[in-house]
Image (cartoon, rainbow, N blue to C red):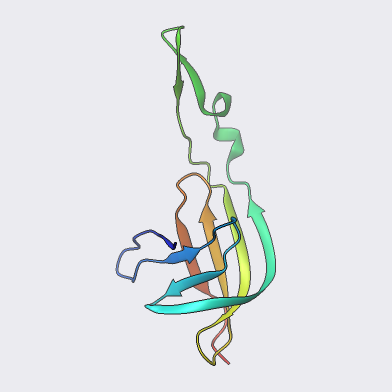
Length: 109
């Protein structure tokens, strides 16, 4: 099943990633199949902004879970194509919110 998030003024990105790695995605209303993952990396964000890894003691008896968005991201550069046109994209996963962002990095060949 595709995971989807809403992006203002665009068709919502949707990424099929059942095992964590993207396999297919929808971009501007077209379905793309990923032929190759060219590279993959993580951007750690502002890890120094976390307070006790998001855990705070609340009234000394209850542990309150707080999620801090420090900007951590997982990014894949992929070659993907609809029928007949191979292109390169960056697919970014916000690991805190679980939202996806898709950016074309080349024009279809």
